[in-house]
Length: 234
Image (cartoon, rainbow, N blue to C red):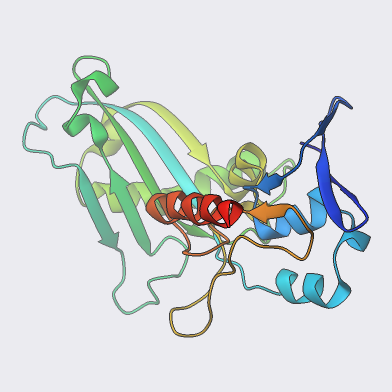
């Protein structure tokens, strides 16, 4: 979708990147609030004060990702989920300090070739300062090192076991998931604000996803769809 079409204050359909127009009585956006309000809608489609307030919502950082295929020999006692805090004296939200490790092939051997495991490691990483310039590949490698260091706490000889390595950055997150700054979602702290519901100021335009109630994460996003569906029935 390239644009949500609005006429007379009402959503009437969408225009695709190939120019095709699809008319619809209701439009539901599962893009982030920033992408919906800056990329899919024209500035004049929203009341200025509402748009300004919505776009001022604080943003959770993006991520560094490390996807690995490794040799599994000698790892029969390996478990699947780990959280590594590299330095307890530092803020756990500091990029590279708290690393989440998932090894799903521990439970399902069909997820990796025989004799191998697949691993996903990630940590928060700011979008600021990232660009696809001549130093991009080198920076990717450098910023992935804390993830490998964390993984060494679980598998000490991990570097010698790697047969496939894929590194993702905030730019990867932004490009492939089409998310503003590759964000994980709104940084709305518990007790300090509420995620917005599915309604928008534009008639027949609704929103779902992790920048709506009840918040971030797969269960919450699924619930946002239920809330939206119930709103449509009212």
